Image (tube, rainbow, N blue to C red; front, top):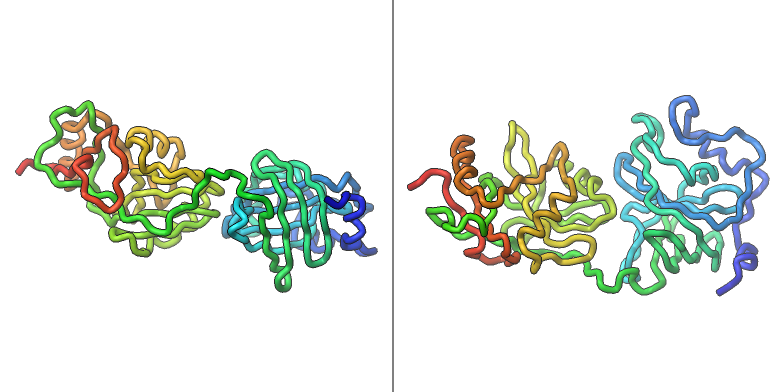
Length: 347
């Protein structure tokens, strides 16, 4: 590894101008809570601090910033830092930020540049292996991200970021490209041993699986083929999960006059497939995600309360209930007796 003090010989010279001029020109210190230092001699640190901020602006992205020559040299990374060397992510070089920004968290007012919530996603120290106008190689030491990364310029402000080390979590698995949903078998009666089952409402909606990664979501339908979700659902649901990759199962139904994605299962989370995990544990994991928003809701489930759920479904004029065995695994693409669709009205 090249010592840091030698690598600085390749660094971009700070120049005689005000390196924060562009930053100041975009911000009104009277309107934004962001630090806007006055024009003066820049403070100098040890050139070894980095921060990653999750920025819920018009589109979710992550801001990667390195302390360098008295400022924070910055890139906006729309999909976050890659966890594996198999994938490169776009990184857009942005204006230098003041050192004080390394501790900034807060809400930038709507209408201001970069309006939206900013949270610190990770921070720590870094070592420089190379720093030039076209390539930056660093070793990160954070609490959530660590390892060797390289940023390389492609065109204009557009760069790419590549992980040079093996995957941070060797056991992590990517989301599947497509997964046909599990289907319930039709029955006329509720299961006899209600304590072994949980019960959900049948919403009579459109089945939709959501593949959420890097703050975005794509969808597949009944047959596992690509499908469209309600307008803006993908970006908003992606923002709700942030950097956590997840595969969700649910259906789009009309509630109070609005299309709503009702989520009733989680099949993959944080690099771990959950198909073989019992239904009860999957539902508890899903509840723990706290997914509730303007276009989506976590659907309720009721262990051992089949009769009451069926009566409630009848009162709400819903078509029925779905009984699911508490110990059942998820069976993609198949109709299973572990899930049973029971009409709300007795035939």
